[in-house]
Length: 488
Ligand code: TNX
Image 1: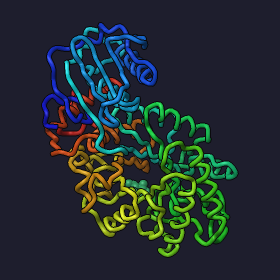
Image 2 (image 1 turned 180 degrees about the vertical axis):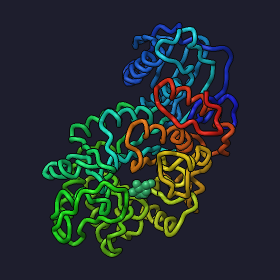
Image 3 (image 1 turned 135 degrees about the vertical axis):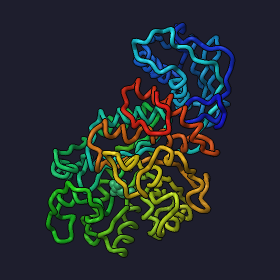
Image 4 (image 1 turned 90 degrees about the horizontal axis):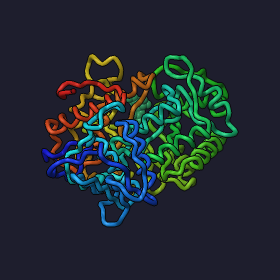
């Protein structure tokens, strides 16, 4: 970074400008064989949609995608020269990341742009990610987003080399995943959302479809079933999960912390085992998230007993357990449990202390500091959408101006699995709302998750963000035209 040749987001490890340009408009084919072929086909379909180029994928071509050893782990090497383009990586995931870089090197254009505008300036890029886990979270519980919306968001994440989508599938306002043997969870518990107007849910086939689509974009789905609080929709569906056997009404407000599973009821643990077992079986990725946040109406000793049992049940599915950092209060987490930190860049209360317990237990942390990484905070006081609780609004400059290794004392890159940008949806009801809250801040978080640690120079980021904005516009993605960036 600070390298004036750098033009893309997230900033590559190194990018050096060369002489001349390659005119993609004169390319006749993409060379991509064996495991590279699917990425070649993906790139071909993007080029068709973005610039109207029809390139066959085969053995030869001016645009070569090559899988071979010797490239940076998780990354790629990209060479654009007047005679052609060579993108090489150890595996298809690396090629896919390189293909995203290539997209941004192209002039933003629409399908009817003339082919003469397809010159790509010569450049040599060598690149690899800082963190293995580069996530976004989408809360589909407060407002439901259907399969097509989620796929669209997955495509947006791919553009920024994010590789995890954490789905917050259950909360007080809605239960969004079909669970066999518990039909009322979705029939009843899935029928509402914040503010009314109906909810929705994913059948198990819908969920499989999302998982498979994400995999085609080298994105892993992390399912979250939030326990033992944030469970009003489940309690309303199955009164046997409450302590007094009375079903609470469905809930369409935005308060938190009022619901809890009944901790001393064996039925609770049959429920947890059934749900987590099915969720794990549907999920090919290595992680299962069990929430554990804001259990404000679960007494502390109950909370600790519950977390011990529920995290054990989750670990028994064979997945690595993830929980929000409050779960670090439990002295009995399965070894290797991952904590997701959502306090501030200056930790408050016991957040730093309980977060460190995950590391002491052989796990790592995902950082999602609410004052910089929460995409549901207002941009400024005048934002129509969003919340303010995380130290007020979050500008793009604030979203960009922090480093994961500087949040928790004694927690550096080795202790960090990665970084995540959550999008809670209390105030976000449509895809347009979602996109304009996520963009452009999610680009800042993606750069923090991928690019090497270094001084974060907003003056260097802003021109790249302006260029990225032109790509977003060409893709039809609405975004917030934040001040301090010379948007085109
Ligand atoms: C806190 S952060 C929550 C969510 C809310 C969010 C709104 C966390 C683990 N829990 O329940 O939706 O604030 O910003």
